[in-house]
Length: 497
Image (cartoon, rainbow, N blue to C red; front, side, top):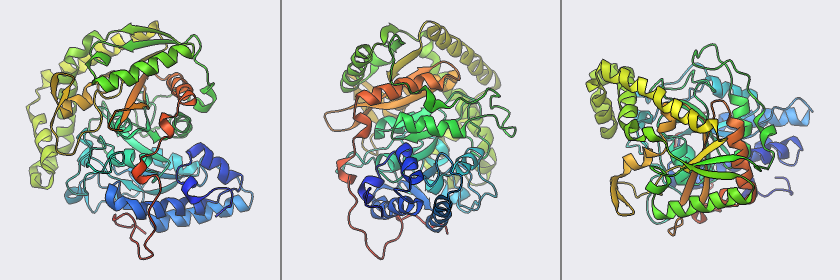
């Protein structure tokens, strides 16, 4: 281990800093990967972030990366940097289950998903596959087969991490990996980012390929990075995005080098606050944190005004019709053959898709144009929109009802309420931490931009993070890993060597 960086510092390094340290020979890729594997071994049995840990494969790749550094060979932007993948991204030769042990518990793909291949080409090293709500169909992030991922911010109460990319949120928040990939159909990147206190980016629909990514609903699925900072998200997106001939939904527009957009200034930037149905519908602690963030935006030179998304009333019905119908179409063969192999809540939701008629589905798709056009009209006079990412903080596992102020709500509906409008519209959105509740639970702020203008939302997020420290805070219960048992097994998750 280099004397410059301790192992404790190494596991909390951002991807940008870690790539720089490796390129400068201050840290070796083997040290970086070994530090993360040791931390996974020490902590993951209690967090259930990983489904599969690729210990030998990651170490072999790290040794090869180290040889390249020492030989003075060309280095990619993520050379030697560890990454975790939600377990619906195909990985060549590595178990990929979609969180479904009984249905896909032996599935080993022959090729990497396009975005995984692009990150590997940039030098990233895959640590393993991350836990998720089975088949990505749940905003709580629960998994009856592999265990419910545990939010690391509460050492006493088992709270949800948010879904469906629950393992991705936990892994980044708990220092098990600096980068994770997630997918987002109704909020599944932004919800765990909000509840776990990390940065989560849902790019514009079509910005990143979904080839080799298990679908939930084809017309609303997005994939994107989950990281510790907006700067990390900018770097990762610049490497994974772009046209893919194997995915006809991807855009041919060129991919900017997003890190170049992080100027550190938002002077004169126009910010529209989604107040009614968003900010005003959030819990008091969430409102307070978001309003404090808005005051900071103004201090940083932004021009802030209030706006309203008039079409919000019909968003839940339209989104549910599309997701249920498309998910049922994908799962119909398994539902016929082995319905008892699904976890119960997922099976129940999938079966509802059989009752969505053709006209209902078409009307829901037509309504998407209404939402998209309304968001575009709001953004015609503003650079970005902002709103809370979720109206509530992380609830205990098993809690199904919550009160938002004096208004009762079901947890599932509350978690999705602020995120899914922008899956319908397809706009890019970044969730960043903006504060904590009195219980010490993270609160998220989402920044919405124009189509394919990820650069603007990343600039806003990065400028906010330069002026605050919310994104640098660590869960005290896992800030330092406990001593490692020499006879360890990695994270309680199966090794794939």
